[in-house]
Image (cartoon, rainbow, N blue to C red):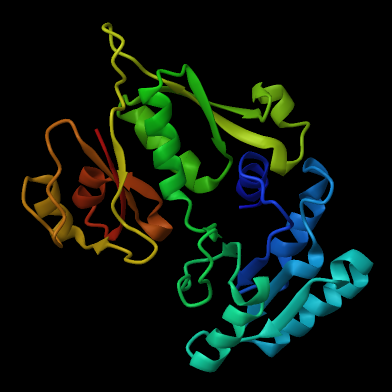
Length: 279
């Protein structure tokens, strides 16, 4: 997540330091790590006074505050507070707590609820990141780029491995923001690491990966069991989702079983989140 945040701030800078809210903050690791990574960004990009972590557990909030105090003045400026997003009063307080009541600019959402706490038109939700990957790869293919860097995350590695296995891309290489290099990968910090995807083209220069569309969305997570997956991969509609066409694959997050192509998940009788479809 940190690598994605840094890359987003580099590519889409704010006019002033953004207001950052971390839901389910725990010990504050995400916010503290983002502060540590600010050396990778232009001076003045981040302001710890505009960071806030919320958690329903008072013990977690106390721990985060204690860690901030131990790590120095800048980290101590990060705010932490108890909030229960099921309570309307807590949600209203969060909405008004930043940007003079205009909401948060960046929301670190670990699968919680995003719309409850942000009414800012510029808000950039950070989790999940599948939509960002779909857009990057689809746009890069249409632009006929040779390769494209993507954030170094486990999810991205799973997804690109499936694309490689099914012949939609040519290769995946570890590297840095500067380019693919397995040697440099071992020398740089995590925020500088990237996965470089080599795209694949047909003899007539048409991209093999022509379309990569999100199915499950943060506002409506779409899950299918093995029977629903069977209908979906055999040309029948399931949960109002149009069936897979010939040559099209679906990518499923099967939780503890990992990520699988839809037909493989169906054969193994797994259920999971229908993340995207690729053709």
